[in-house]
Image 1 (cartoon, helix red, strand yellow):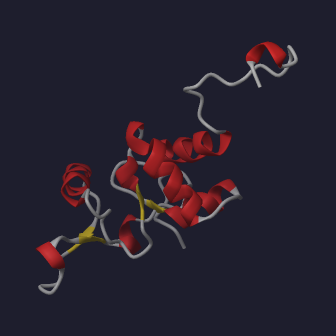
Image 2 (image 1 turned 90 degrees about the horizontal axis):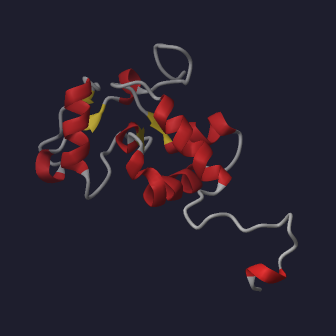
Image 3 (image 1 turned 180 degrees about the horizontal axis):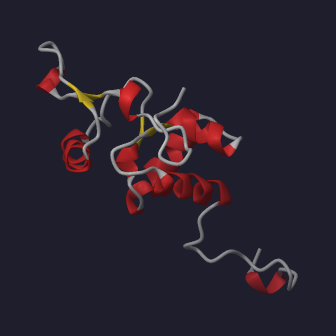
Length: 128
């Protein structure tokens, strides 16, 4: 359908416009304080829609412009392929980490989810 055949009140979105859900996910990512994290599931729960996979998809497609390293897997494993970049951000922000087991590939630490997880409220003590 060409633009000329659209009704005047149905103008198409600009090509660089984000889907509404993506905008909401990115807004939550920007709210997470330095040194804290939320899981993909936490973000979906905060928004009241979608799930961890939908949040992960948004972050994979559009997350580069926000602090992507603050939206994480629930097990605290760093994002595969981006471990070193994320680790640099975590160390700079003072995000609580757990030492890697000797059996862990590359000996990359994990996030200390009990201490780093943010529940979305003020400067709260974490997700309960």
